[in-house]
Amino acid sequence: MTGADTTSVRIDRPAEEVFAFMTDPGKMDLWSFGTWRVSVKSDGLVVGTAIYDGAQVFVRIEPHPARLLIDYQVGSAADNLQPRIFVRVTPGTVIGVAGDSCLLMITALRVDGMDDTRWNRLTRAHALEVELIKSLVETGFDHRTLPPSEPGPSV
Image 1 (tube, rainbow, N blue to C red):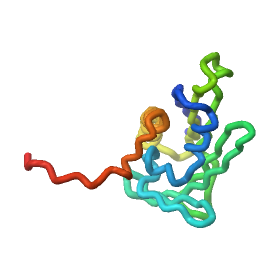
Image 2 (image 1 turned 90 degrees about the vertical axis):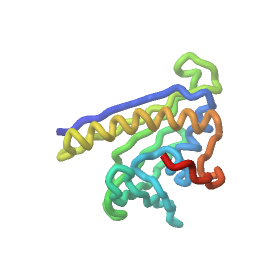
Image 3 (image 1 turned 45 degrees about the horizontal axis):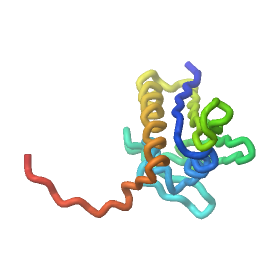
Image 4 (image 1 turned 60 degrees about the horizontal axis):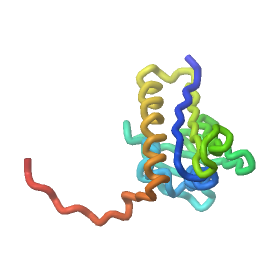
């Protein structure tokens, strides 16, 4: 079965700032559940680990700055990437809100052969990811800068 799912969130930051965040491969491990423990190769190829099953995931980010569009080429091998995730950042003035706000939309394609469990997991992850992106961009928080925590009491 094929199809698509779009999720969106209003972010109280300028569209250009959100676009820059979403096109920065070094930020993906802050928000993407499909690409944890990211490494970025010299040619911009992102290699990450899927949090659900530990599979290796490859991503190439293709920005289109004039239109604030981003294509994420995704695959399980570096030489077989397909455009499967699409991002649009829409300035607030277009949707009738302040110019320093924007709407972030992420659309995911469901490819033939993707079972319902995997598809449902993907769409739920994207719904959470947009909320996480909103928080990260609005606050500037980066968990990677926190000092290691002390072990807590045994439970």
